[in-house]
Image (cartoon, rainbow, N blue to C red; front, side):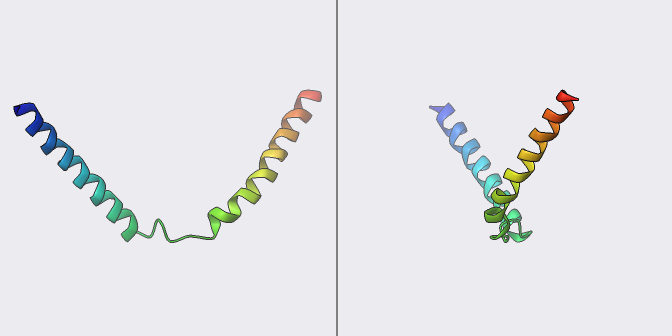
Length: 61
C-alpha cells in the first residue's frame, strides 16, 4: 500500500515538471509560428529530390 503513495507522489512531481516546461516553452514563444510548418512541407520535397539527384550523379561519375 505504501508503494502506491510513493507512485502517486512521483507521478505528481513528474506532471508538475512537464507543466513547468510547457509553460516555459509558451513563454519563450516556441509555439507562435503558424505559417512556417505549413510551408515547410513544400520546400522539403525539392531539397530531398536535389539530394537524391546529387547522390546518383556522384555514383554515375
